[in-house]
Image (cartoon, rainbow, N blue to C red):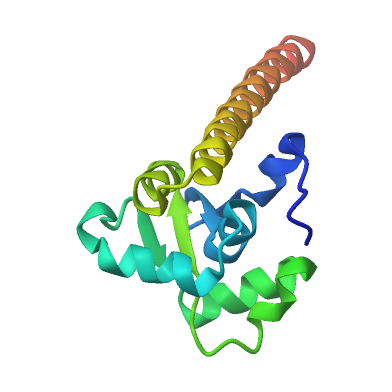
Length: 140
């Protein structure tokens, strides 16, 4: 994956794992233009900033499912370290520990992507309810 990911495509980097919308450490490292190892190091050094609802480590099974369902993450298949998954709040916290101009700029775009993602979900929910209402009228 190129570091020139279009801002409009950030939404494709959001996965649902354990019922939470998350982004994976390797994707975030590419966006922040830092090695994944350096990103994980900063998280480890600032562990108190990343409670379980901000960040969690994937299990072997979750990692396997992710690699199976997402070709671009195939390089994780042979990694001995499980990826970290960051919730929206965890991604926001990353900017505070990475402390670079790039991290700030990317974080702003990621927060906007999460907002767009939430809006799409809400719109789809409203559309689903409208369709169900029409179906109910037709079936009665």
